[in-house]
Amino acid sequence: MTIAVYPGSFDPVTLGHQDIIERTAQIMDHVIIGVLKNNSKSPLFSVEDRVKMLESVTSHLDNVSIQSFDGLLVDFVHQNHAQVIVRGLRAVTDFEYELQLAQTNRVIAPDIDTIFLTTNLKYSYLSSSIVKEIADYQGDISGFLSPGIARLVREKLSKERKNEQQD
Image 1: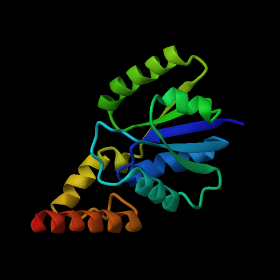
Image 2: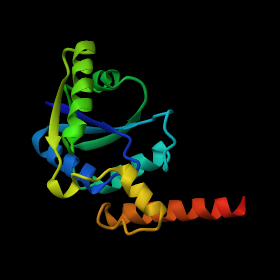
Image 3: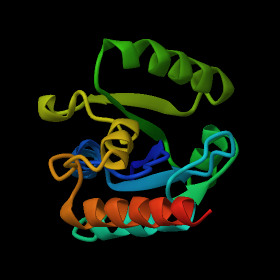
Image 4: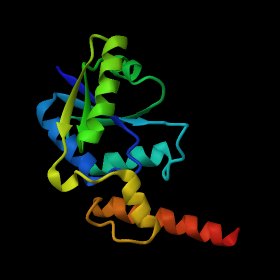
């Protein structure tokens, strides 16, 4: 059984992420989406909320599970008896950084391979950061996120704006 880990912050999960998840689920026996607890970033959503969002958009995929993790990715991969790390590539600029990570991971854990999936062209420009910025200015994010996730992002930012106004 081939198990793959697709790691990321998924803050929030975009249609580009969903595309990579669905395609990976078609070629792997099992896919574990690893939601990174990154202390160096200040995410919009908690890890628990991001896990719930991913569960909602992947509920139709029987061979996908979601877990949060912190620490080294290769340790998380080993803990889950996975053999493959999956990374999405949007543009050439992603490739150089992702190649460095893949090569470093390969030195640390020679038994783990990294595969790259290029994103669907219609999502090649898309990132969670861009979506959050558009949403922060109350722009239309409906073309970037599933409807339920877009609603959660708008609600979260609306609450944050109200809290800021009260301070």
